[in-house]
Image 1 (cartoon, helix red, strand yellow):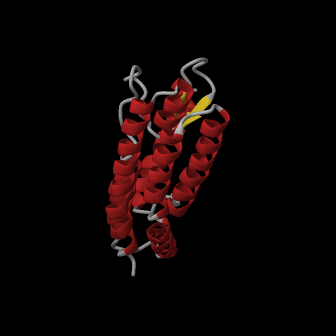
Image 2 (image 1 turned 60 degrees about the vertical axis):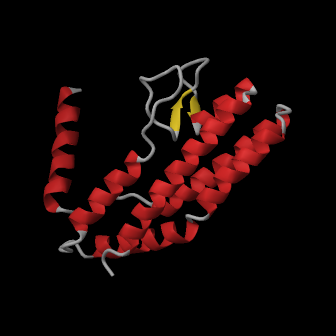
Length: 173
């Protein structure tokens, strides 16, 4: 196991040293979020959540729907950069990708040791994944106040993503 960690560490350091653009697809992430929100909406309906759940899920969906074109442009720019390994924009692209991943970091109420707003272990078993956990837990709890906070937090994620996606789209062009 120590050998595996050493090999993985060496591979990551090599990639960083060579300046290659990381393999990350912003358009796929935005598409996944939209699919997860559709599932959350179905779950809220099945659980008999009030109109507050549908309203806030729609607000989050609108924020991420607004990212689709930006994410497509960013993904295309990243594809161009990957085809040009000598690109001077590789470091800037990787910095933006790091920041893009970082927008998903935040504290989960009652579980500060989990800091991923995209996916976390569910509260009941600790093993099954909870996707968009702030939304999922608000639905499970039937908690309108938590859903309002989740909606605000995920819309903030989308806003932060917007500027990073625009920065990525401008690279390698």
